[in-house]
Length: 400
View 1 (cartoon, rainbow, N blue to C red):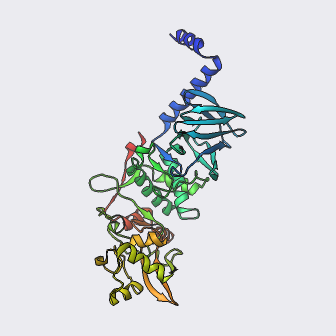
View 2 (cartoon, rainbow, N blue to C red):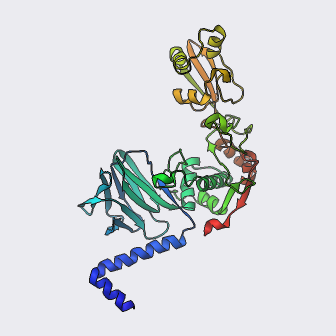
């Protein structure tokens, strides 16, 4: 039987191609067998990549275009992929340009290896990623997808979201909530051909981990750990940089109540670097926004006064009063504010917004969690503080 199969292969392919085919099959099988769970991550999918480059591979990668084996990518060569039109792209590999492909795969031959991804149109500096890659020509851009193991992905997320120099207990917190978020949201971009994007729309995943042993340990020590509700469903583990001393009711941001995510008064973040901010705005611009978009009754003297003098001690959904119908989140978006938690006053003929926090404020406050870790709280206590109505559980089936 083996001789018959070998004879069949020889009649169709060269010995060299057969070897490469078997090598590719082995790599794909090994990747599938060893991986606990993989995610497909869209790399800046809204950016109009027209020409991307793969280079500086730490170990050999196999390059396939449609059904053809193109070659091996290593530390001494590079691969460029060029968008031509929907369903068509060209490759430049080994100094040779090849035309008219619909799909390109760049496949790792070992776990832990990485390469650099960059772009010349538009200009994007190189960033290193682990895992495999798939490139597809869409209507007006290239879609680049990174197929990566969940735990490897988390190491990159934690460093991108939390930075370096934090306590391990904080990184363990971030590992649990980011793992939970990824698993809960893995169908978020399913219709677009990937699970999650690498931007803050999902979770920041800007590059592979940079060899931080403390982050690697945090991910390993919390492996399979997630937050769930009483029904066993994954918890909505939202997080933002700083809540300004009070986490936000999700309905204030997304017009939707989320069971279990009640506001928490946070005393840990109030003295951190992003707890306070100030922005000054021209009064004409301020008034024009309210009048043109919401027909704010500036002819009413009391309303006019409140427009320029609105203290705020606690978060709320609407500016001044719900009756005016002006969501705080809309003001944040219009004036590019750090948060929707701010008071308004007039100082030196300018509208002065004195704000608190950075980000939407829902769920975990990252800077608050960092302070808690520095004060000696362990990761289970920190998770319990921000997500008191959810349970920390181990789900070994994630390894299947």
